Length: 175
Image 1 (cartoon, rainbow, N blue to C red):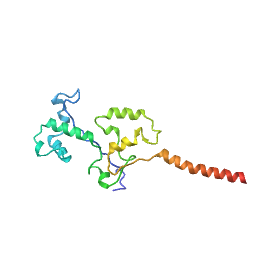
Image 2 (image 1 turned 60 degrees about the vertical axis):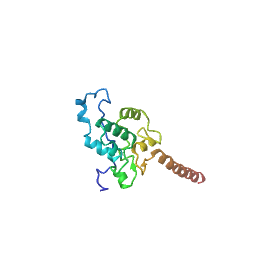
Image 3 (image 1 turned 90 degrees about the vertical axis):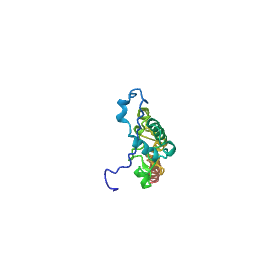
Image 4 (image 1 turned 30 degrees about the vertical axis):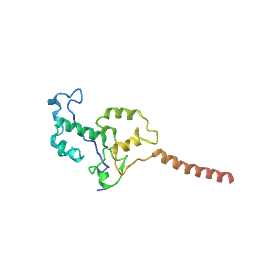
């Protein structure tokens, strides 16, 4: 329902594929096994991306996880029918959707968060410290992303406000 207050755009995130041994802390199989996706889920996600076929179906689980991890890193958040915006044929909205947030990038979340907090949002092509083009790339909605340019709107309005003020001052000088 459109009027539902909880319906505030998509909240798509990239699937997190835990790779055992990829980080320094989790190289023990026992410790990281609870974070791993079940093999059935890994196979399902690979099939969904057309990466698993008859020729490589007997691949080891570690290799399947690596293949899935690499595929997810290359794809954007809103790429299939899982995204309600894509499914509805509309663009994602930067004000309501959270798919473009840097915190959703698993591999680069800490670096992106520190970079976005240190950048000023005074630039009209930035939203909360994020470059609009990188936001659109992270989202990946084939219908696009709508980002409100508040400073552009203010500049546009200012043209008319100053024109009205000038015409009022001209009328006052004549009288």
